[in-house]
Length: 152
Image (cartoon, rainbow, N blue to C red; front, side, top):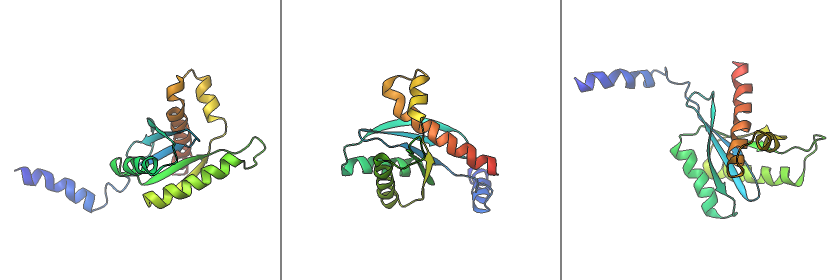
């Protein structure tokens, strides 16, 4: 009896009915702290996850790799800081370098989302300082998800 009740679920996955599964990891990269958010399995809603301290060491990248694996992430979205005049800054370059390293380490697609003023928006919303980075990552990821979902 147990076998017959579990077989249909396997068949659904095998037949591609659950192919809509697309989980995302959102990143707000900073020189000291990296805010992390994750989406639901359908890639529609972003949730704050944690802050990883950026010490530029292999353990930091290993923590992010573990999150990708543990959360079954299909794609990573990194907030890209663009200046108010739409120019790239030194922080933009550092973020691009980080994203390249993360892509190589995780082995999955990394995309960028404009993060202009997200940290200021989060700080203005009264989010406690210790949660601003993960909240900013959530705003970045939700912005990306909203754009993607409006296309479908």
